[in-house]
Length: 149
Image (cartoon, rainbow, N blue to C red; front, side, top):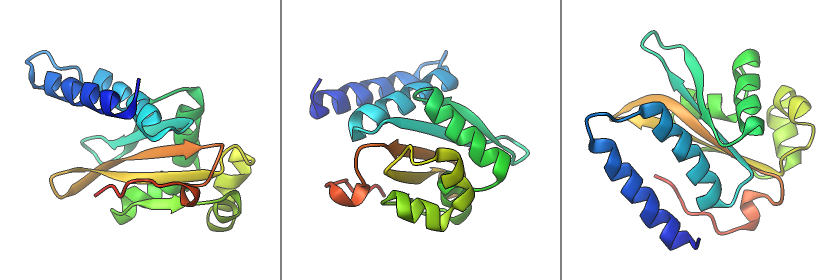
C-alpha cells in the first residue's frame, strides 16, 4: 500500500473512533502499527499516563517496541520519557548520539537502532504520553522526515 492510501485509511480509522463502542486500546495499537508503516521504521511504542500520573506501556507495533518502552520505564531514562517530560520532540540521529545522550538506554539497545524519534502525545495542552519511533537501517538525518507539530 502506498503512503497516500495508507494515510487515507488511517483517517478513516480515526473517524471510526467517533462511535459509541470505541475501543481506545485497539485504536492505540493500530496507531503504533500505522506509525511503523507510515514512517517506514522498525518499531514503535506508546506510553500513556493514568489518572494518577503514572506512565504505562499501552501499545506497541511489536515485541521489540514493547520492550524498549518497558526498559525506559524500569530505568527512568530514554527518549520517550524525555519527550513526555519536556513536551517536545526528541531524536537521536545515530547510534553514537544515542550512546552519548542516554548511556543506559544504549546499553540495553546494544546498537539495535540507528535512530530514535520520540513525540509527546497531548490532550489539549497537557502532555499525556509519548510515541517512540525506532529505526535500524538509517538515521533520521539521512532522510526527508516530515516535521510533526
